Length: 289
Image (cartoon, rainbow, N blue to C red; front, side, top):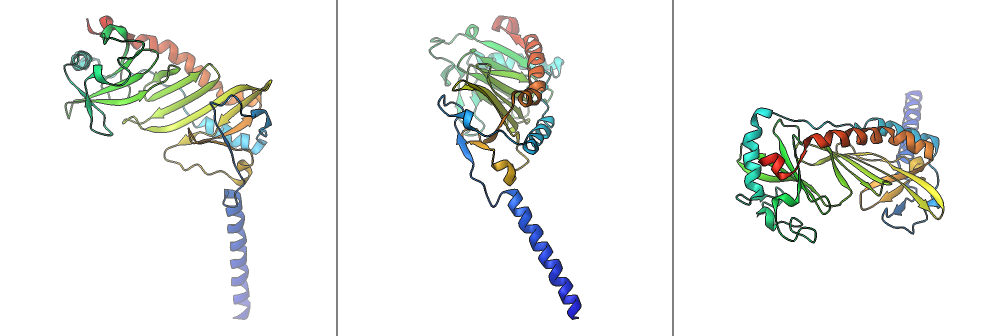
């Protein structure tokens, strides 16, 4: 009996040691994390430590999970005339649209930046339109943009007979990337890619940027975040992490070669997207006349 109890105590001790090591590695014994502001031109990025090889490997594996490519799905072409009629009514302020989060309803001419410094008078011909299946449900959505202040994504729900603002963005460097995807490329050096679900909710976010920091080029890549996965950094990774409160992602400094390897597929996807987007982009007269 005494021998058995000793063995049990040994197993308990081993288990406790293993749990302690796991806790320390998972970050409960936390290393302090730097906080950064991507919009600041004065942050000394050149002083950020380079991520070690194991951390870079984690980044590489995470980026491999991200599908940057997205076609502009056409949906059911036989229903195009039906949906064009509905979207035409929206543009001509014959019907309102609804904000799903609040239930508020607006005529298009009264909403945010539709009438702005760029377009002081509402005229449907002042805007560009994309017409394709944005959420992958087989029915086309209408994307409206003034190419500066906003990109609005509208979806008509045939079942409820309601027009909804499915998604919206508000920076001139943002782009429609394809079905279920959006991106922005700020000044060619700061990038964000998002994959959305059928309701316009973000399910994946990837960010990275390059910057001249006091005469030294610095390359920063964020660990991709996924809506269905909690981001937990190991104790090792916390030593190199820089947290963005604004975008809620962890950045890591990498070398130029590592940065290029991480982002190569993104740039290939952007090139493909830019070509395919032209096929679904229209003026008002091209789409509705």
